[in-house]
Image (tube, rainbow, N blue to C red; front, side, top):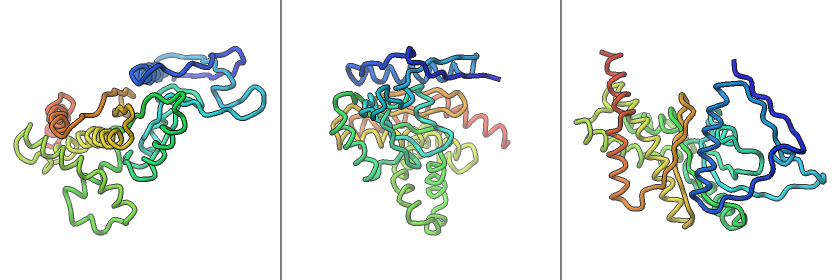
Length: 263
């Protein structure tokens, strides 16, 4: 059992200054994720200042000072501030199933860019393994007959993910020969490839609209690890990324392991 104790202490962690740029903001997020993973390894007592839990020393209201805006999935297993080990007021978080860039989500991020420029340095689109919204999109793609029975609000989410699914399916077919998604192994590989491509496509779309530094990444539910990268800048680079993901060791392992299980 791992025990984590948070102690609010006026002499706790000082309020950090905003990162200087997007690269430093990304490094701060990744360092927070590393420290989040360490929570599972040993007992820790974390001293935090009152400001870190939203308490203003003079009894007033703290102004917003986030250094990163995160578009993440609504999945309850992906607590954004916790997995980046960030205190209150460090992140401007927008959450929606499938981390899709609907008008309300992009409008929220646009607000952050326009009004929180003093401290905001980067936008991150964060997907996660085993995403239910991506699974729904993959299953609609593999079984189009099920699509009309889906409610209109859910279809609006699925529709935004389907381009990533098609891109992933084509890349998997090229990397492994044939339509691998026909079997259980291929379906799982298609899901996880689509998760990453959905995050990358969404990040590229947001960058083109807002002209602000954007990163994308995937939170692994098993390892709790996050990796961040800049999205591809053009269609050719996006195709290259899809091919790289489809041929990667994690996807090959999914195909090999699941095939062995079902054989």
